Image 1: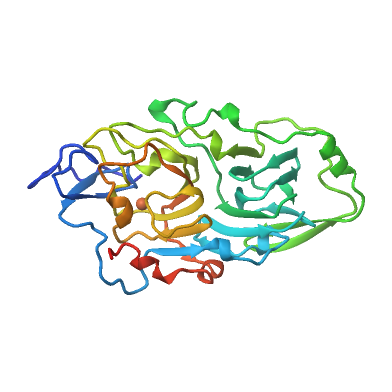
Image 2: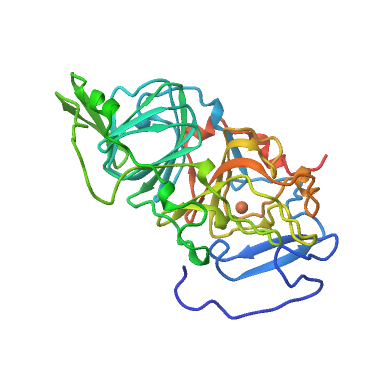
Length: 377
Ligand SMILES: [Fe+2]
């Protein structure tokens, strides 16, 4: 949040609504320009045409899409997974893991979040064992030693909070048990399977990532050999099915209401199925907006992606700040009247306060035609 007071203006000109995202002048398209995501002062314009009606878009700034599902190379170490997007506060990789990791991993650069797009199996770590399946977020506190043993090949979106923590967002007026109850978070258990894993003989390597570089520490025994633990810090598992999204029948809520995890300079949000608004004047699709203070990343996990054409599961879109984005033409037709009762999509959004750089992994699977996907035929 900016220091000091916002510059105190309040105005209105011409034809306008008095309520954001509702009761727009007939035949107009609303665009929001705002500060600090959707939390600061904002203005709402009513345009005659969709604000994404460009005929050409040249230069380094542009909406981008990457088909991460097409990154076919598997890697037994998370630290070899291709980098997709990064800045000083966050690092996003996409990791395909075909079988059990031969070595343990430890991230000394920050807290780690693994989002399981595909695959299932077990996570072994200092704290015990926990199973994973598609749709799971696995939170791993910085410094945890861990190893995945998938029974089905896994595809994982990795998000690192560089030199920082993952926390839960303040639920404010909703109260702390909304969206998901903290009691729904699962933590690893020290069971017989974990004991058998501990008892495996041989040499064990731990690949420690620090400042982006990997060092390998070798033990003559399995270092996941704790017989117990206590405390209030542990890995946690949350499946997207456990998320009960906030919705309003009369108001299209901003995407920030779907924040699942927060860090210092970015947030991770989850879009889960929710009913469309039913109020006749309320917007039923995402509003056009600039989001000038944040770069926006969206990873499509599963379902029917209602606001986007030509997007499949495993696609990641990247909308750097600096231009207006919003619904594609197909979705826009249903701006005020939706044929369906509810959305049917699971997607992970990462909004970063600082600009992101595209990594070599993403560049290899870019869809250069994405910038043209808002054009009407
Ligand atoms: Fe956005």
